[in-house]
Amino acid sequence: MPPKLSRRHLLSISVAAGTAAGLAEKPAAARAIAKEIPWSPASASIPEILSGHDYIFLTADEVAFVDAAVARLIPDDELGPGAKEAGATFFIDRQLAGAFGAANAWYMHGPWADGEETQGYQSRMTPAQLYRAAIKAIERHCRQTFGGKIFISLSADQQDQVLSGLEKGEINLGAVKAKSFFEILLQNTIEGFFSDPIYGGNRDMVGWKLIDFPGARYDYRPYVKKHNERLSLDPVGIKGRPGWDPAKS
Amino acid sequence: MATRLPPVDVVLVGFGWTGAILGQELTEAGLRVVAIERGGWRDTPTDFAVTFAQDELRYYYRHALFQEPVRETLTFRNKTRACLQLPDSQAARRVIHERSADSELTNATLCSPGRPVGQDQRSFAGT
Image (cartoon, rainbow over all chains, first blue to last red; front, side):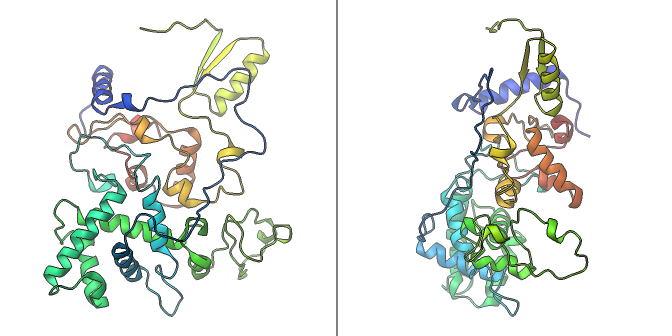
């Protein structure tokens, strides 16, 4: 049991943390609302729409690494395309180039004691910084271990060996925590395979087709009474899909 | 220096469903009411519209409805083995509760990226 904290203790700590964390940099945006509803009809904070097909954050070498790594995490096999074919690398690139990569919303100040296993991402680096530093360190490890070869030149078994060494934290990447990188890479690969296609991954909804997921449908009432039937609905994304007519769905 | 605001009949601390109903009833009864709520304005049609509310990446993994920990966190990490984090908005907590009904609500959910928490997180967050 952690020590019980008195209210006074808590308040004094809060004040200290507030100062140390430099909260003055980004004060809470307080706002007084009177005699109105701060909301207008027919407006919504719709998702950001991606544009272009070029990589923004990842370099060509990093793209090759991520392509190879995600292809081992969710491989292309007899069940269908894998994460690489689904565009997970492009998804990851756009995530790293945006708010997620910069950890814009996260608390990224000290104190910097190591987190517990259960405490999730605790790195000082933003996800974008972590990817850059980790890939560099992994390539160094590969060259040392496999006679000068980089990750993409390794056999599938050797690549698995590297990935599993990262997962178990057995590979020393210096300043970068191998496990933290593996966890975020796996998480982002899964996201890039199963997220709505508006984010650049799950191309042609291959992730959803694999698991027979009908997608971001508005209404399931027509199907409520269909028990134990395979519905085989073509998935629909937030933006619909080619050939999809909202009036007929 | 404390700022003195004009006095009112009722101050509601927290403007979720209960606060909103109370606000309606009390103002209809002719009282002057101020409600205090933490964080940005949230309303369902704008922030959680049915046409894109299914977006699991945005709402579940990226916590789009939560107040941002970058603004809200007051932390003292593992040295004292406890950590204070202000509670999230009603809507965001509702998402977590709904999710927890069919999946394990583990610390991994509560301690998601950039959200430092410690052993006492649940009691402080009031969840």
